[in-house]
Length: 213
Length: 213
DNA sequence: ATTTCATTCAAACGACCGTTTGAATAAAGT
DNA sequence: ACTTTATTCAAACGGTCGTTTGAATGAAAT
Image (cartoon, rainbow over all chains, first blue to last red; front, side):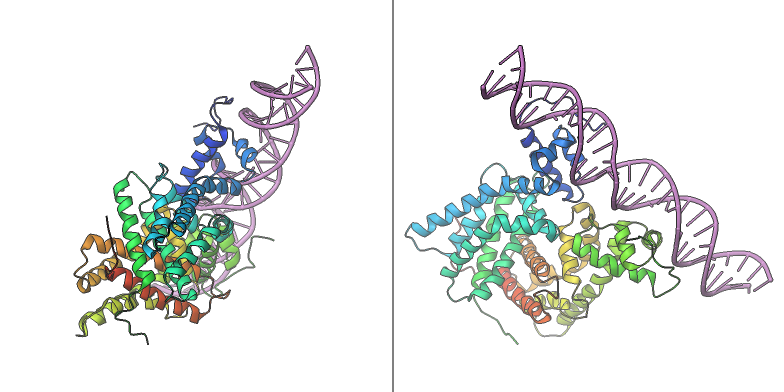
């Protein structure tokens, strides 16, 4: 019922406790509907600690997101690097697997999908700076790799299709997000594989049965 | 600077003025970050009018959304009905066009994309009741129609792919949303056509080049 | 032992929130 | 003319918000 925490002197890491609590609450209720007081209470730390460690509420969100997405992006870029230097020719499938499969690894799966899905749904004033900071490099690198294996698709067209792919990804991350209700690790992995298949088809587009205009 | 409006007696329709103002602010800032005071100020009506006409903030959001999406859903169902009774065999393309093209008609295009995109990004406690109310029927009818023309895709698989399709749609609606910056009516329409092509490919999945496990 | 510096703490700051109230006002019905 | 009903209004209700302050506390450095 009360707001304050029992004196908290160096037990575990205050920073990490705040990040853990904020992560769960942001995913569940969104940024605007989550108060720093609720975060501090859940983390069992003093309210002022949130500003001391993160400067502001937006700063906290950025830190929450960066902690989780940075390892994923590293895995993505490492995977792509490996593809490019291995000698075996790249395919749309191998590129997409390098892009999506890092979501499957690590034991953090429970929060990442919801976190990514949630951030994309936030107003631009909140999401845009973070999304640009975290995703610009990865997006450009993978879009270029896809352009290599899909020479028949011009760049403007590829950019559209890449957007559709990201949208499909966000949707599946959002739906499979609350790990523990109906979604298991296996159902999540299955969804990721379906996602890869769907996007390959959409990116390549067999161009059968079209009758434009 | 002040909150109140110059006496407002029966000028135009108060209800509509509130809906118009709320729509713009919800799209721009999201539900939680938009205050009823800001809505009342923008609509130039008294604060209490929002509760008088809509009962609560959530009720207002539901009304805002219903006003825009109901005509779209009507066009969708009419289009599907016409396909089913016309005699000419349905295709994935004709079904998807009946589903997506209503976004292109009407002169309300400016707000609808952002509205749909925004609502999907809101926390479940806000979005779920509205999305279920507005989309359950349309989703089921179109999913069944697709099942007819894609007999080779089993129903569980089709449900996955339908989700991916919705995700692609949301993404393009979100990106093309602030009509007037870089997005024109033509670029929006072009995006819609690309969306249809992408989703047809994903739904049908030529099944070429797969090497699953 | 004393200074230094990072961290935690309770308390408060001013602002804004959704909602309610009850009187004032207008329009319609009789 | 009077009553009824629907709408608008200013003002306030009790709470919650992000952020700031300045003292207390602890460990490390000298």
